Image (tube, rainbow, N blue to C red; front, side, top):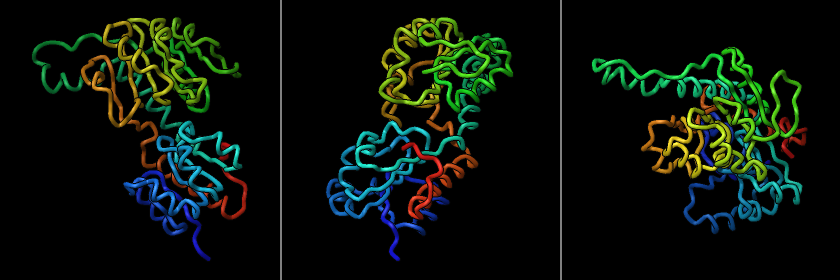
Length: 311
């Protein structure tokens, strides 16, 4: 029996790549300079797409694969996949929730600590300037007022961890949750009562730039912003202006518009902690993500129920 043809939108660790190539006829999309010609050639053979949250599957790619049956995402976010086209054509979509929740929450809390306590500049100070005096005083983390924007799986775990620092926790979400935290429907109001806002919301048309100039203004010159969700959830130009003018105290960011190419304005700032989109970047979690992505592919081709369907 011939192997099913799968279009691969990005790179995977060796342990996943080897397993994928053993089970499927893989076609690596980024390896081809003339992508239109490549899709015209292999598109009709493609039955599944293996992708990630950043690469997704654009309308032109989906349209070039008339026999596409499913898309398996290595990651939680599916905002880069043309979901309208998938719904219209009955294409199934899966992602890899839960397995990366703890690592993302861990990094979010680590970013709060690093930003508030100046851990990264303090390390540089200890190496270079300690003999010149004391490092500047930083911010206390225990007892902070924390606002969580988007209280899904990751947001709930962030809240659980922040409770260990005796933080006063509130959240903003589409609906009230069964949790002992204050509920806000307006992100501006959430920011106004918070010392730090952590963004964990899914990205979609409704959440695009949900962290607006007004939210940043409400957070204020002592406020801190942490984002481990999607870059599109923040108005990046408004954020840069707030950081540059001191209208916002500081930011810790794991995601950026146009990454890995960063807006050079970020590099000139001392009040921002930059991370290379690695919230799920541990060996344990990436192995689990790859396994779940491959298990969804295997379930589809075996005619079984998908493990973690989005649609």
